[in-house]
Image (cartoon, rainbow, N blue to C red):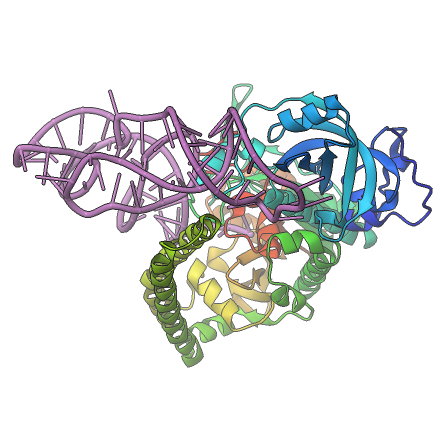
Length: 529
RNA sequence: UCCUCGGUAGCUCAACGGUAGAGCAUGCGGCUGUUAACCGCAGGGUUGUAGGUUCAAAUCCUACCCGGGGAGCCA
């Protein structure tokens, strides 16, 4: 059934897709069904929607089918009175995630998800689903990770993937609008960029090769060809990290700009982050609402970001203010723990007389409380160590995860830390002309405990210095001969950075763990599905 | 590699030395508009594996396997 709406209003749905493109089905091709996010344009018309059964409810003579088609959810009502026998049979028989084609009239109904519902006159069962493993209730993470291919269909994952999509789109827009050329660095490489991280080794026709851990060096070569470039590709780290901030395969965006110094580099990083967050809030309001993301911290992501030197960051760690914040946190945890335990106790007393659906709510609440209590216990164990680590931090050390987080507590938006002691930074970093102990590197730390999402800096331009650095880091000089050429043939000041896509998406969505920010996460001990 | 928590029905959890339970999911029945609908009934378990302590073990002990969280490292 073709779209029979005569409306000429602009496509409301396209605004929600957030791509800026007119996304009306009618513009694509002569297809015979409409997407759920375009139902508003078809009010009063008879349309066909195709999708999967998300959930259903029924009572005598009525079935409420919640249909999911990827663009949104819509309640489709089948009434025994107005539907033919075959249609009624389909409504009765269809199981969760069965594929359906439903035809009916679109009616405005404020109470429904999406604001519209379809009065079904005819239903076709495209395929009947077997018993679906993911039921509409709470599930554990191991189970869900094993069902990741199906879990992606759930509302929460839908929202996250849509935000990820929007972030990717905004990244391209941001750079393209500024004359950057997107160029791809190789994924298979013969050498390590930084030498420190662990690489995935593969057999390359009998020779050793590695999966890239950064497009950085090739990015520099491409910037010398194009002026301003950015890479956007997968990155691999074989570190045996087992934390909520690590993946073994993740996507990284690495801009590289000729004739840009460290300050200009920080400007680019800041403008980009502001753009990503602003766009996400503007175009993914529904998604962020589904994720129950607190928008206040995101609204504060406006330039200029505070810029602190490594020296200043160390001072912050040593400050009385930091010690006071630590005590405050520890005290806050105690108060929260007491109140949660009190609630748990009260709920248990009320449980006996509660009705069935209330019991279910208590159950869900108990799970949430227990989870939070476990987190609190964990934080209680670590906060004193964090406090000690901050107090005794020695100049010259690299920041640990906790030190980073502690620094971000002092600011209400992302903070840029720059000019680090050179000895724990990569060999290609330029030295600070004003202090030879420092390298012109910079990290952007996201607030709310999300930590480092960007790392970069100004690159060394002097050939002799670079060669000495390669030797000092114990790297084989031969494999860098092409890289040295960049300094032989028109070496210029240049800089760039790398941004972790999943960390950024995690932060914007307010996720607890990075693994939800990528369709199929690759973690130590997880390469399925 | 180290620290820490856990493994009970298809799923989420309870039972903490004495006959393994609840909700969801599934099946059947009821209810003209439900919003994770609701109400009733039913099926569903060698409590991760292997030993040990005990009259008695899901529960205590030991080892191993699997998973969650964290440290180090980093995007």
